[in-house]
Length: 297
Length: 343
Image 1 (spheres, one colour):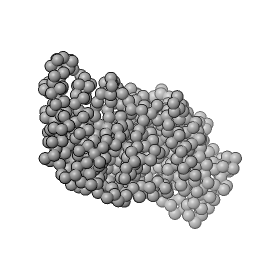
Image 2: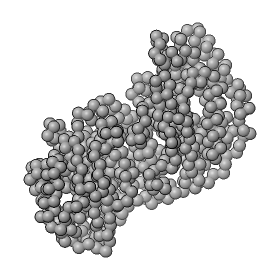
Image 3: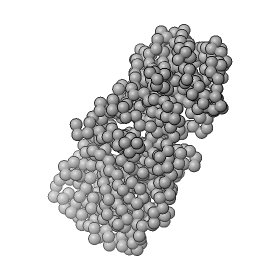
Image 4: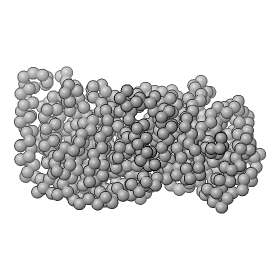
């Protein structure tokens, strides 16, 4: 199954038409069955098209964006659903702010080749800054069936932003049968390679699923974002055992690679990490988290 | 050599005599320094040593004792207050068995490695206690002596030992998650993780494969561990990325310091590789790479030494930029994954 990760670098965000044309061109050049966009895609497009005016800094811009989000989300989701239908691909559209019953969530969306919404995932672990923005946490993790042209069904989940650094997310999804995780991320520009290795790469290695990591590259309200996108697999089935099937620089617009479900199943059979996990030894983990949270209150 | 006959029993009695505590102590007394008081503890600078031992078979247990002594002295000379030895630190003592080379090369003798571990266990365990208790006391160090395959009643365990500078066994830790090979050997899995409060901080010490899983370091960190000591013995060709899986990502997920002691080298076609090292959350390392010190070689003797700043670790935890806990999420899914305590 061929997958691609997009950084939005070099994509014209000035109008919806130009954005759609540029993205279409990149999709057609990489010919994926699955395309994954980075986090903050809705925000970047909203600012680029002038639908929102940036504030003096990133947090202020975030507040402005959140305050009037509903109409923009309709436009954003309709555009990406249409693009998925037109290209007959699965399209993880990146992330936006979701407003539901007065609560704000950082949420990612994925459309199937018919253009229908097949998954919506709220971020479940917030950074300190996101807690300051008064975001709420999602409390469920979802999986959907992604049908590859190779005839395999990939149980697929979305990983939003900071959830990449929380291994609980990958473990829960893996134990519920995940074959593939799609991560929409946005990291401030800088030396990010180790931060990323500590995120999705580590989650892949300790769960033996595939992952697509799409990292945003661009500037939002004076804040520079940039990290390399990646397609990740268990080390044993990647060149030089690196765990990477493809890896881009922050400014690389798109990277793509093919996932071989058969190879992954072989590795899981040979060395079944999750079967070897002594689960009973961790039955007290929930109490430990609970005690920690009480201690912090 | 069959292990259940008269000759075998007599030979084990001979080995017990060879490794009797008084003999080990007497032998060490010529080598060990005058007993040192532990260095005063500065929580901003705990000096730790990760030892990388090159595998070789010792026919004479006194030579093994000398080697462990040499390694400890090396760490102490660097000012270490804490030294970490590797997993399977008993393998080298298989050399006490005559003809062991033939067993390793696949002789006709129907003796398995677990049989040998069981046979030697009554010899190895007291030797290890005498040896490391005396080393810890003489050098004024905390020593995580590595792990040993030993009999526990009718079963085998892969057990690690922590000794304090008073020369006492502070706590033990059985390996909780086993390799397929160890499952085949019927090694008994540990059921929980220990954390030992010391003036150097709270220490946890899971064993090798335990670091494959985020849950281990999360459990330890939530139980108060500041420093996690990890003995490893990896039977695979060295590769940077394969070796990265383990303690490095675990330290990034659960903010603690991590110290890895490694067994390396080749014996009878078996190659152990790895790099002993000392790791920290990215935010606490100068290169933002999570590495404080690491051995240069993956197959030769080495040592990594670094200073750990417990205050900086606690400051990071108290004002962490990205860590979060989502109890409703865990309540929804964890019982299905891990079961419930006691049930």
